[in-house]
Every structure is written in C-alpha cells, then in structure tokens.
Amino acid sequence: MIPARSPEYLAGMVRELLLLPSETEWVEFKGNNNNPETIGKNISALANGAAVNGKTSASAIWGIDDETHAIVGTNFSPSTARKGNEPLETWLYSKINPNIEFRFNELNVDGQRVVLLEIEPASRQPVSFGGEDFIRVGGSTRSLKDYPEKQRTLWHVFDQITFENRVAVEQVSDEDTLQNLYYPAYFDLLDRSIPDGRAAILNALKDDKLIARCDAGGWNISNLGAVLFARNLNDFPQIRRKAMRVIQYSGAGRTETLREQEVVNGYAVGFQGIIEYIMALVPTNEVFEHSLRRSVPMFPEIAVRELVANALIHQDFRITGAGPMVEIFDSRIEITNPGRPLVETDRFVDSPPRSLNETLASMMRRFNFCEERGSGIDRVVQQAEFYQLPAPLFEAPNGFTRTTLFAQKPLAEMDKTDRVRACYLHACLRYVMRLPMNNASIRERFGIAEKNSSQASRLLNESVDSGLVIIRDPEVGTKIRTYLPYWAGELLY
Image (cartoon, rainbow, N blue to C red; front, side, top):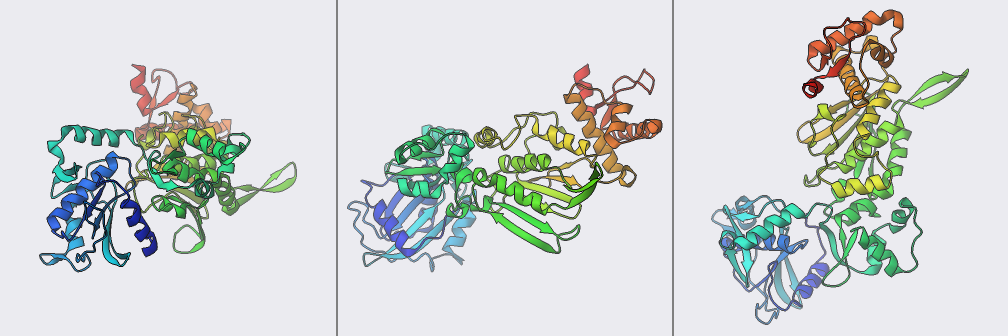
C-alpha cells in the first residue's frame, strides 16, 4: 500500500532521489516521454527491480534530465492523459498483472512542474505488463526472459523474503525509530533490563530483526518490528489494516452493534490488553461454589487467549484490506483471521501447526502469548470439555479462518451436528493423549451418569454413522469397545 503524502514530503522525496549518482533498477528519470506502452513496461521493470533490491517502493520522475539530474520540468499530465478512449491510469491497471498499486503525483519542485510515479514492489511473482515481465538493465528497460540470472534472483527473493523480513518504513532516524516502536515492552516481555544508551537499545532490536541498518542512513523498521511493537499501527501504512478489531453485538446477529474497538498497538504491546478487553465484554454466568455465588465468564480465558494468538500469528498478511477480528454475541464468540489454514480444519488437533509467519509465531511463543508448538488447539478443545461446553467449530469460509466458541448448552439442547462434532474432537484429543475414547470417557465429556451409559452408546453410534469416528476393535463387546477419529484407522495398518 502506498500512503498518501503531503506535497512537501513528495518534493523532499524527489530531491532525495536526485542525489543518486545514476538511475537504478528501481528509480528512473524522464523528461516528457508519455508513451503509455513505455510507461507500462517501466512500471513492470521498476516494480521487479524494487523487489530484487529489497526496496519498499520504486519511482519514475518526469521533469528530470537523466544525465545531470537537473530539474527541467515536464508537460506530461497523467490526470488528463488517455490511451484510446480510456484514461491512462485505468488502461495501465488493466495491463498490469498482478494488481499492484501505483500512484501519479503532480507537484511543483523548485519552481518546476514534476510528476512523481510511486510504484509498489513485486511480491510473490514478477509484475508483468501486457503479459510480459520486464526488468531494468543498465538504465534501460528489458524483457526479463532475456536475463535468466536476474529472473532466478527475483524468484529467489520471493522464496526467501517473508512478510516479517520486508521493510515497513525505511531510512528512519535513531530517535524516530525508538519513537515509533514501544521498545520497553520488548525488554519487559523477555524479562531483560533496558540497556543503557540509545545505541545499545537499537542493537538489541536489530539482533532480533525488528530493525535493520539502511544503506542510505538510519534504520529500516521491518514488518516484524512494526506489527509487534508499533505504538500505533496507523503509522505504518502497509500494515495499518492488520489491527485487531473487537466487536460486541446485541443478540445472535450482526444487526445491532454495542461496541467496536480497533486495537492500534502492535500485537506484543497490546496482546494482554486485547484479552482483558474481550473478557470484560464476554457475558458471564452465575455459579455457586461452597454456598457462595460468583460470576464466571461464559468462555474460558485460556481458550480465548490461545485462539486470539492463533488469529494474529496465522493470518495471511498478503490479503489486503482485512485483519484479525473478534466478534462477541450473546451466546458465542467468533475469532476470524484472513487466509485459509495450511492444515485442514478437521486435523487441527493432531497436526503440528504450520504458519506463513514462522518468525512471528516463534516470537509470540517466546513472549508466552501462546502455547508451545502443537498444544494450543488441544487446550482449546480440552477447556471446552472441562467446562462441558459445546465443541468449538473450526471453519475456513471464503479465504478466511474462523473459530467459534459456544456458550454452555445442555446435551438435550444440542443438535446432531453439535453432538457429532463434540464426539469427533473428543476422539482426536484422546488419540493425541494416547488414551482410548470409550463409553466412560464420553460420559465424562457430557456429564452423563453411569446408569445412563446407553445414552453415551447412542452418541458413539451416531458418531460412527457420520463417518468421523471409527470403531477400533469391532470384535469386542460394546462395553469395552474403543473408538478413533476416522483418519487414525489408516495409521493402525
């Protein structure tokens, strides 16, 4: 995402780029050349060149002499330029693939009219124009296919540079780096004292790849540093839409919103506050213990904490315009993040978690915000069973991942889908604990008295009929029979 900037900022950006000794793979100077085909090829080439060189943007500037870098002005007017019957910008967007962002800025620099084109760098795949990929070579725009070494380098960049390692903002002063990042939280979460002196603090942040030295001076703040420790995510245009939203509704639908809060702190800075805010909104139940009445949250905090951490960690940051969200209803809570899971939803309990953001996941575990690898969802299911809640529901609708926790509901009020899901997840949990699922464990799961063991048998038969649960030893009697999740049968033979 290219942020909106003031004319003063853009003029300063032009002057900064003019200090370069020559054009680069990500910067081009032009006079009055306004040929649409040339502009399209240059967008492709500069976007790819910015990716190769790890730049947060690429630029083309009209009104500059490319030999002397003198500001000579230009007659090019992108706001009125057309290609055939289409506005230039609309036509360019129709020819560029994939859809990257670019922005023409018409401004005055030192009394001369200048046009600055800002271009988002390529990510995941080369940017093409008219179906062909381009690259800058020696100040000229060339077809990428004619330079296989550069092509290999570009794909290597896509393979190696993760979201966390990309630059959120570049060339930031020492003072502004420490102003933008709430660094005391970093040391507090690691149970370390804040070092003496600005240099020592910055070096500590650098060691964990939260920041990196910028070749042009100052620091580059990485996406990892920004998303974890930003004082305000809105200061980082590329990730500001990734702030956690918490919405409370009245009733079971989304027609009436009671409260909505966007948490703009970085995840590490604001995580505990997010959990406290959610739990303050969660409805409570009145329970009696030792003749005393007390309020208990409708959903266990341990489960909420783990699921919120998962939503932050496992989201697909490549999906723009969407971020993690918690929605609280009268009798359920839904936790959603952009991106389909890398593990099928019915294998969440037994499969080790996989994430697009392994560095982020590792740091969140270091800060004790989530469980060790492979145990988080187990605890969510376990908490639901301990409090005899309906089983959580894991879904992947339309490119998102959503988990729903439900309020307490008597077994008599659960429908068949609820009952089968609870039995299946119970089978998964027992399997990873190396314990059998049987009539006795189902009675404990649902709070069924021993004298009503036939009710537990009916639940087991219902689950077997669904295909999600199988009988481990069909030859033995029903009283000692054990059961497995459907996928475990393949592991036995």
